[in-house]
Length: 478
Image (cartoon, rainbow, N blue to C red):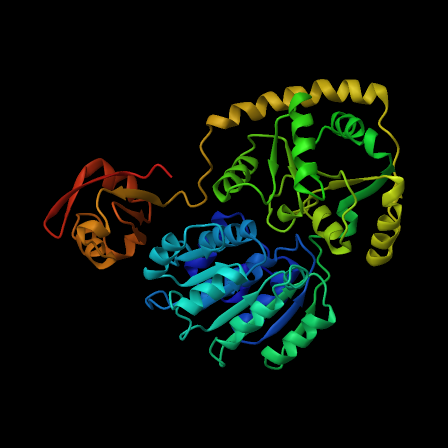
């Protein structure tokens, strides 16, 4: 089966081609037709299976672009995942002119209100902030048609289940509800029976994420010898990019500092950091600007990067489910991966619980050999030099036929989307079909120019008149 066999529109198919998606994954083959037919579904699928696109594609297909109402709501457990899902769905829907917004805590409320006042089709957010917006009336859900509860088991573990119930109670009864979870605890099944209509359960054994793609092992080592084992393992394995998972932010900080002292290109990621710092770290990691990310489990569900070759569990996770989600960061998109867990004597009981939970024994690994460490260190240091060069490289653009432009006027000059569309449609060589997503901010505006017409438009025009005001135009920097 190919995506073109799913009766998707040309804009969506072209976007998927630009993203390099040709053949749907197992979960996409299963889930997309049901959502397109407005059927409630519960999808049990492991991380790394391509499930974001399995709901993102049909949501983008079903959205009515001309409507200014929020039509789809996606609930996720973490801020990182909210941003990741927003970016993924935005890429899928960009040629169709679908606008997405992500809302989550520790981000200015007024900025989110400003964004929600514009035409937004799909909102992605964490339960607490979504509930706040609904309560205040800044997120209107009366015309909502689709709701997705993503990572439901993680939401349960994080104590979000009551907030999710409150949100679902405030949504239209005739909506389509879709629930995704790696596991289906009793509480999730009870939730589905209360809030879903004759939900079809899809138990997807993904061919994309499976045990065969990830070589798992553990090494017995006492706490005071773990860091030495970590740097020796990294030099021995020569990962392209890797994540080192710790259980607490304090441990992340200490391991990160030791990594930097040892000369590794490394960054840290944990809940104490400011949101913009966390997003910046994620952007740099995607852009190959550093090799080693030291993180708490806050990152385990929010990182969808295909070229992570290794995961190191510096500490055995306290929650059994976290092990599955940690190792699921590697072995993605059909590539091989390795997951190595460091186990102290105290942690052996936690490893036993994980093995019982996953249903198989993890192989015992050996300490790295001296010669392999020495040879690998030379290779790893060379590969780091290549990553340093990436700091000045521009992020690869997914949709090369789109040019984002910056207009030097916004709400303070009383500009509206319709004013910008009218002015641009009168420019020679442009029609309404060439004008994509418009973002009107206080002092300026951004506009997507589609169909490869952006460069010529900028070449021929340095300013544009909107509502009698002459405004400068230039290529947007972001």
